[in-house]
View 1 (cartoon, rainbow, N blue to C red):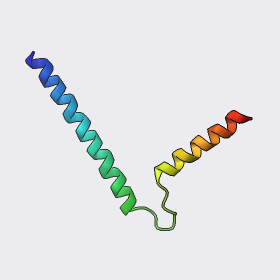
View 2 (cartoon, helix red, strand yellow; view 1 turned 60 degrees about the vertical axis):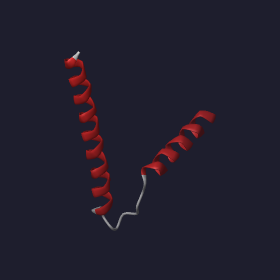
View 3 (cartoon, helix red, strand yellow; view 1 turned 135 degrees about the vertical axis):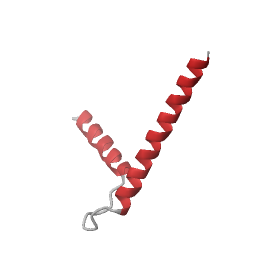
View 4 (cartoon, helix red, strand yellow; view 1 turned 30 degrees about the horizontal axis):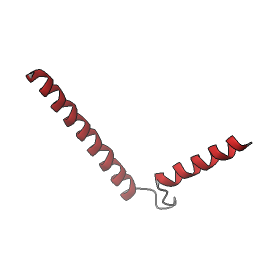
Length: 59
């Protein structure tokens, strides 16, 4: 029983650590981005992908 609890705790810790790394990476990317490129948030990419897939589906 104790081993499974340790395994769950280790997986939760690993997930939190990876999530923190992703958040810090996104923040660093926003701060140190190329100022000549326009700021583009990922949600716009997702919206364009959905619109393009709908357009493709209708043809």
